[in-house]
Amino acid sequence: MSSNVPISGSNNITAPTPQNTPLNQAPISLGLSRPTVPDINEDNEQDDVEGAEPELSGFQQQMLGMVHGKLADLVGKSSGYIESLPIEVKLSVEALKGVQVKQNDLQNKYKRECLELEKKYLALQKPLYERRHAIITGAAKPTTEEIEAGEQYSIKDDEEYTPLPKDTPPTASGIPEFWLTALRNHIGLSDLITDRDAGALKHLLDIQIAYLDDSAEESKPGFKLIFVFSPNEYFENDVLTKTYVYQEEVGYSGDFVYDRAIGTEIRWKEDKDLTKEFEIKKQRNKNTNRTRLVRKAKPTESFFNFFTPPVPPAEDAIENGDIEDEELEEIEEKLEIDYQIGEDLKEKIIPRAVDYFTGKALEYEGIDDDEDDFEDLDDEDDDENGFDDS
Image (cartoon, rainbow, N blue to C red; front, side):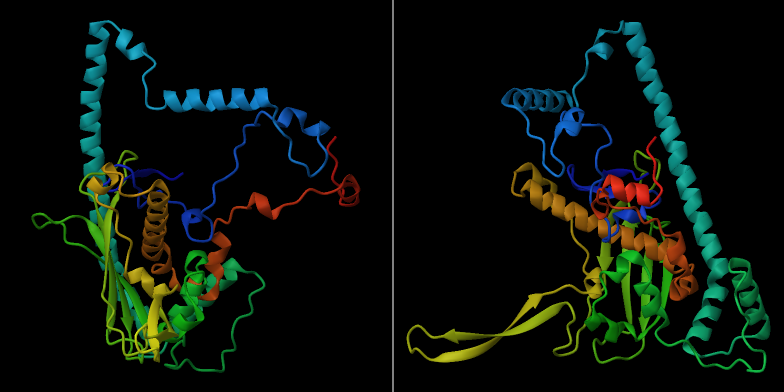
């Protein structure tokens, strides 16, 4: 289950907690699930013509509107039960809140210790990540022991796996387009990587993770994603980073809550900015009637927009009504996607890069069936397929 809690600086925008955000909040699946409770129309579905939408009578519409209005009025309001309790009981309720404060403090310490444990095991994994990088880039050749261990892993996963011939000695050949392939095999990222992006991502040598030093004063916990590139014709940077900062205290669900994200400014080479499209427009001078051609840039979809994260609106802008509800929802959706991608890179893609490269990781991705992907079958079709409702 997911658990959304307010982002720092905004009472109306929510962000996912790092641990509890499900994959289906990624770009491929942001739709709301359909309610399982039947609505007021479903009792009469058998009388409706197939494929026709049942209509509510004027009275039903009026009653439904009244119900919705009543429910909306009750949200966030007390039933009056707590207020009716004797003062002695109210004191006990306040005491429970005091106990809860201590529980919250312990939970906060627990999550901090978990974060320190993550840092410890990242340090232990560092030599393995370095070895992986050397094999991917061709800086070192794989050992016989590594190959044998990998084949045993493959056989355990697939009994029909055929071991590779033993007469070819391993070489430092490297694995071309390793990280581009791995990223494209992630359900959410595959929709963000355009054909134009692929040219630049072919130069991606490694993706690393580093935790923020939150021991210093005024620093917060979090982590940094580090994208290492070989020299290329697209941008000057050798390294692009994306930093995710957590809030100091854990959220209501007991997990860390994202506070903000910070991306690297990409130094694009001339005419190589993948986050923009250029178009030629013809303009006419009102006074001289002369025409000219003007080249204008407009934003476009690109994986590299990931390094320019969305920014939550200021709290006073929300309170003053300067931002419409639809705009707030759009910002919330963008923030959720951004945080989810960062979490998936940290928790899934970096630790199991080879599984994403081979596509094995897709077997474990939770893909929910969309209700819109199904259609009703005629009774005859049901009989032919052996379905029986009795």
